[in-house]
Length: 335
Image 1 (cartoon, one colour):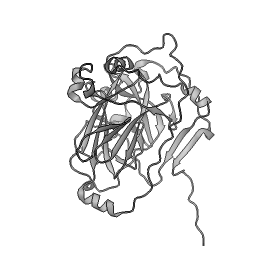
Image 2 (image 1 turned 180 degrees about the vertical axis):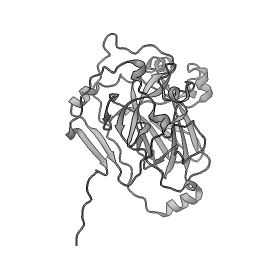
Image 3 (image 1 turned 135 degrees about the vertical axis):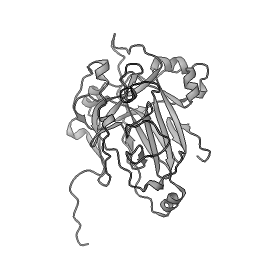
Image 4 (image 1 turned 180 degrees about the horizontal axis):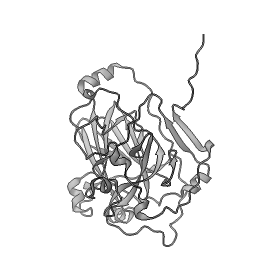
């Protein structure tokens, strides 16, 4: 992508330098306890803001970018791929870094680290909130104070998700090109979602404004990996950036004329059907320490009320290990 433009390929958001990001629908976790990785239940559709100049809010036209429809209290995770070379990717939620908890920056930082490294980081399900855990991304309207942005900054001005990619420096790229490529990214399976029943009478989402942001839900086992490259390996300037607007399903229909995806699948029905959950372990990677600002973010249930959706814990045989299954090393012998 030599022209420095961000593009949509299907439902993948392609940033310069060979970075691809997909926004995945998933099961919302209970806000109590720590859980395994929930599955992907299909991709959120993406549309360019500039394709709808007569129907998007004026502020969105000024910010540009793309948009996707999301239900109140729906969960998501971000799937990453570096298709041609390593890259550093910043992820903001309402212009608060999801990794460091610091304000959005046009520069990479190592103290604290404000980005993830691709392809080592295959996905991000939430904010970096604890040792070896994240708090799940959950959509909430602006104006309640429930978003990460509202809790960290005291204001809710931006909403949405912000992405910014940094390539390797020329010298680091030359060194990398001389090395043998190692194994590729392990991807989480994306099984077909069980059919969702229509919402029960009285359970339809309340009407809010068009703009949504991300708060947090339950905790899950996931590491945000520490960068092992020297700081000088990355370019000083970003290769590309994009603003991702989150829009309510009614507004999506009004803006685009398209029907949004069906409401999220019932998580108890998913587990009862014996479908898989996941456990990802990379024995060679170091986890980033959490920051105080993100560790203190409270779940959206504090604003929206208790989560009454039924929960059924997956049985051990439903949890699929990915990458390096934790355990003792295998001894070698003579051949």
